[in-house]
Image 1: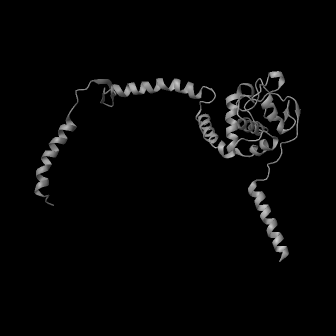
Image 2: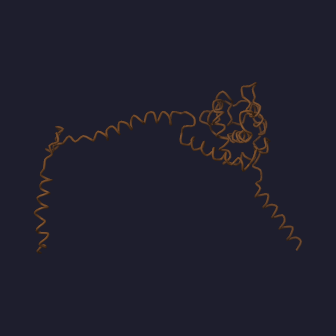
Image 3: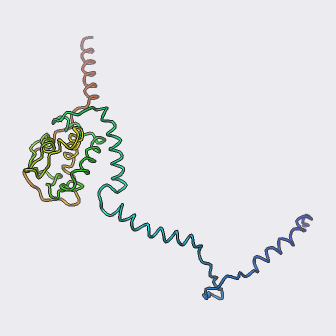
Length: 236
């Protein structure tokens, strides 16, 4: 088959350019290595790339030490929890000032979103004595079934407010807000039955389980509505 004239004219030029590239031997120095008669040119990486690589290695050590060295509050999860709790604190206006009573502690024990606020309060103020996961250090283990100063869930609130152990456990009523104390009490109660990485030996006496979750407002409304319907059905 005959090729068009324009392609026939371009072929010699393309062939010549290709021969120049293929047959050209760079002036770059050789490494001295040869494999099956093939010699290796010494083409080092650009200086900026090497310094960037070295810098990334040097940066990795302080980064690891800062974020993974075991210090509280520096992990991604801890910073996320702190930011989330700070955002939830903005919602305090929604719930107002909480009552410092047993019923309120029980209520928020079963509300995970608010427990995050209590968790932040705990991690900020209580880990030096009780450990990050409540397993106990200087202070007692908060994850087992035995308690030294608590007979009922409401006593957790009292201990946080007034302290215990002749000052070994400080009073927090003048250091934390009412809401922070209540939510911290609920979070401490939520630690019961969890499995810390390192648990201190039980202290005190075993107490009864925490109360069950109180009925929600929606459940109350549903029950009220059902009762009204039943009454209405009976009258017809």
